[in-house]
Image (cartoon, rainbow, N blue to C red; front, top):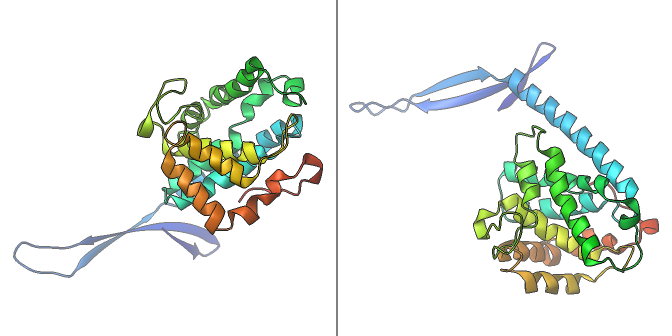
Length: 255
């Protein structure tokens, strides 16, 4: 696609090049077809801007309810997008990771605030309530038209690589790439960030837990990509502030 200025108007032109070949004559001629796709492209960009603003608003609302999880979704998205790029995933998968990662905690609006800020260890029942908020996120976003499998991705975040997860018991590559990446990123961020009921784990301890769960909860290839980014592409420096308590936070928005 090429953007051009026609007078005072910006246009987007799509170019297709079709080689002209004949069974009897060797030809190097090419048929070039130009198509004005401005309306389609600008409408898509407008919708993406609206969705991005919606995402930002919803994320901010959830973050205000739980100071210890504030910025968690943006952190998860930051890590998940880095991992998805490390794996050379397509633009659509990366966009799905970006949107789903940012919105994964929207279901926490249905969780009692006192549970989100509880300073003692959570009971098994309370942990289930927190985990089930991921399904609530998928339910709340089911009817939103993202043109991407955002709700489906959120619904798969508790599936396990070995098939022991929920809700469908998906196994291995039955789990979408975006869900695999976000699941690993979410576990990592959760471990290296402080919570109301515990302090943050160090990177090395978090990596050990991820490796222990590789091939059981997580896709080993995805875990390896996260570790490679952490150790070789500046992850430690970029993510070291995750361990800061809420009052010391200096997080900026994810990129």
